[in-house]
Each structure stands twice: as C-alpha cells, then as structure tokens.
Image 1 (spheres, rainbow, N blue to C red):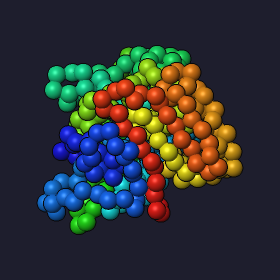
Image 2 (cartoon, helix red, strand yellow):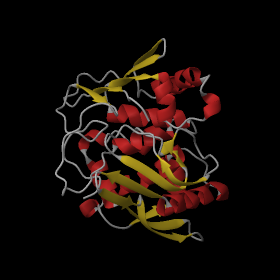
Image 3 (cartoon, rainbow, N blue to C red):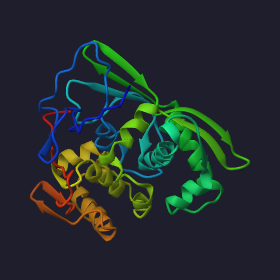
Length: 288
C-alpha cells in the first residue's frame, strides 16, 4: 500500500533502528528494494519537504510537474496542482486523524468546517469556511507523481470530497496509505491542538513537522533548511531571525526545549530523551 510502512524510517524511507542519530539526505544510503515491490513513501516526504510550504493561507499558484525539494534518495517527486502550504496540511491532518479514529481507519468521514476552524483556533465565519472548502479542492485535485527506477506512481492526497456548503459539512475520503502511515505510533505527536497554538505561523508549523519526525530534535544548515521548507526567496536574508521567532513560539507551547545558532547551523532540541522511542536527526543533502 502506498505510504504504508511498519518500520522506523529516515527521510529516505530506509529502515533504521530506534535511538540512533538518524541522518536524512540525498547523499546517504537507502535500503535496497525489490524492483517488483510497490514504491512506498515515508511520511517525511510530507513533513520534510516543500510540498506543504512554510507559508499559511497564502495565494495558491498553479504548478505543473514541479519537482519537490525533499530528502528522498533515488526518487524524483513532482507535484501538479495549486501549491499547498501549512494551512492545507492542517486541513489534511484534521481529516486524516479523524479517519484514524474510526473503525478500520479507512473510508469516508464527515468533516464539520466550523469544528475544524475551532480546533485550529481560527474564527468560524464565512470567509474561513470558504478557505476550508478551497483547501479540500486543492488537496483533491493536486497530484503527486513519484518516479523511482522504472516505476511511476500517481497519488492524490484526498481521494473523494462531497461538499454541503449550506450546512457547513463535508464528506471526505483521505488517501488510505497516508492515513495508515500517520497511524504509526511515532507520528501521533502530529496533533491539531498543538498546531493550533501556532496560529498563522506557517514556519512554526513546518518546524513542528520536523520535530515530530525527529522527536529529539535535529541539526540543519540554515540555507538548506530555507530551501527545504519552501520559504520565499525574499526571506532568505532574514531567515535566521524568522526561525528564532518561530522557535520561540514553539517553546511557549512546550514543543521544543532549546535551540542554538552556530554560524550557518541550527540545532534544535525537544528534551524528550527519557522516551523509549527517541530519535534525533541531521538534515543534510548533497544537492537538489
């Protein structure tokens, strides 16, 4: 099943034991797969890439076969559709986490636009409800294409949407592989309530995805992190300051414990070393 994996994985999808310093990068090793085995994407493709950029409720521009900046090795991943940001990831996660709670964790669920906005600490009024419907449209019509060896896989994040705008309710069917990946215990820290505390700070929400995947924190080059999170080009000269402000917001919510800048390097710690499933990482890449 696409996206489904029972192993702990690094940013390349390689199986790794718990507790090491996990290194993700285009230049690092990946577990070989049989050529007949279906391509399976780790959740890190969504949390550690520019598929969902570090903006929030930004203007959606259409892209055709836009290659994603991510840490997947020996894969080329393209996106066609209206560009997505952390608002779209909030909507997707709300639907996917509700799917996990139902029997079997697969199939259609009812989504109340007002409840979604309330969970994200956003005002429940007409314009924001329209933003929920627009996001569901983007998630359904956007498509990922994964090229690996001689295999090509086309994926939609949301398979089906039925809108009842007069009642503010929707019927949504999220990609079942994405739901199964999210169900893995090590990713349950990706909750809507915590993300709601970051309000409209898209960079804090993107970093929350990174520390959810690497639950003991990570190290990264600031320039590479800027590219990976899809921040705007005009922000590259002040990106360190933007990171500092986002991390302050995360610290207020207890998501991160400490962080430091060492020249062009950033180190983030969450202070969860007493947990049995602790993982840290160094986000590196050789090229895009």
